[in-house]
Image (cartoon, rainbow, N blue to C red; front, side, top):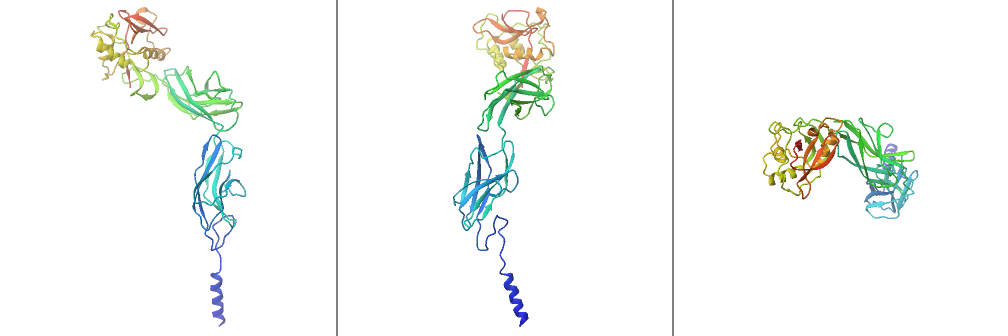
Length: 397
């Protein structure tokens, strides 16, 4: 009889023990169904941090939902900063703390969604991390107009992330030939006016040909320096498919091309490097001077000038190393050729017969054309029948 009584008491004790609620702030009872909440991603807009979460199940009910955050993992409502509202709705919710909620800049935080039950228990979602932005973001847009020894850096905008005064005293770009550039270890080019939010672009000169550079945009405010992401670019000066120099890189591919390549030598016709522009008393009209207009200019000249030995036609018929896409360069393209050649490779001398180059840009309404004085780098207007002018075919890719 004693053995039967002992066995009955043991079974009764085993089935009378309660269970833990899984590590929340307070233990519940076995007949309580806890609500469930998940933590979403944080969004940020102009000094406002917005937390997002979802109550996926109401359980036995809850009265409050919110978020807590800290610089350490597993923040709780007792040891962290919190924001909450009295709401027992199931589904997505979001809350935005005041600007002065003490978020440190450029700092890693953990946050969790939570709900509070009517009995005072706190149920948490999972940890989600975020890094607060720095005071400002600098959008380095691109490197463009790249020559052998010069390039233009362009910053799109400066975004100030916090509701604080903005007093920059210097802004510009820093660059060097290895990664990790900053203003202390690289060369700099600076904007003339620094104390505004405006986009800016600056040209760096004195670069090395055919060389990779690393560059950042920066803004300096007192002792604090803010940087953009680092970009790389390579100066012009590589040898192209024709054996001539790639003398210009516009920084991106648009309209089907990015680079300009000059033929390795001046064009020779009937044993001479002096070529007629062609149709000296005709007016072609509607030729352009800008970068990228050389092919269209050449096609227009060829269609309206029947001279077999015209500069544009000779370029259009030029073939080198299997390449057939040559044209007579426009005024701006020819000037880019000079800018990249200057101090790098010789294209002209001070001899009057060795320094002029035809462009495909006609002076509107006249029988004059823009030509390059390739020794000192000036563009002139000359009549089409001038005889001491050379041609350098150009292609793009």
